[in-house]
Length: 277
Image 1 (cartoon, one colour):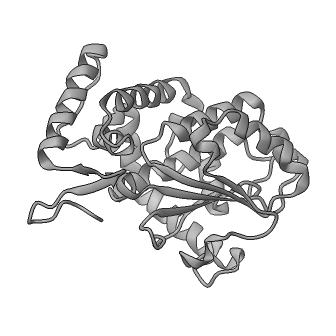
Image 2: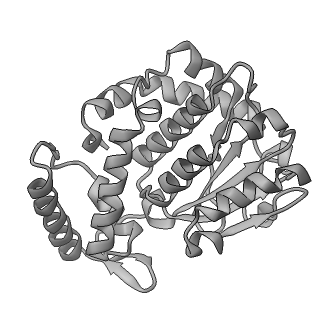
């Protein structure tokens, strides 16, 4: 985890912007005071890092950080289907953890970015609600960022493995649900650097076009589509299912299920107060 070292060297958060102790403290105070004026009902523990993550994501642009943070908070209040009832031991969550629908790799790529595999067709559309799939995705992403602060500095690369996607999977994704998903990604404090869709069947193009229609121009530029495997094999050890020599999907699913279950109190605290982040 890259932190400011003992010599006081600043952290680079992108585009030449350096995070110093002074910048960090004054910026957090500015946003905290603004937020408590807007929403005095919020309780922000001193140790919370959520505001810091938004500052890093926006390269310390205060107005942009405010905008993204308030959208993030409103989404969590509005999307109860994703952000409530997140007990890892609920049967519907256990099933999706067993399947491994969202799998962060356990090592970073050559640019120190976190790589996550999103298995878009791993679940059974006849048995599993798409909302619960997104819920598990966000559960693991929240925990990942809570456990590893460096994700807020170097960002995330998402590989969407679409191997085996069927019409039933596509029909689960209504335009309104796609819009919610895109807006959530764009306002999460994790710097999405690349969205790589791999093993893409031709019949899924319509759905991908809907995704792109809801994306900002900047996000659209970060999308790549491949009929075959990932092009990231040169920068990170990919799972065996993507042609690499890394841990298999099954091994990653077992690791993340155990990790999520071990952190069940984290989810309970976040439902009480998102600033437990």
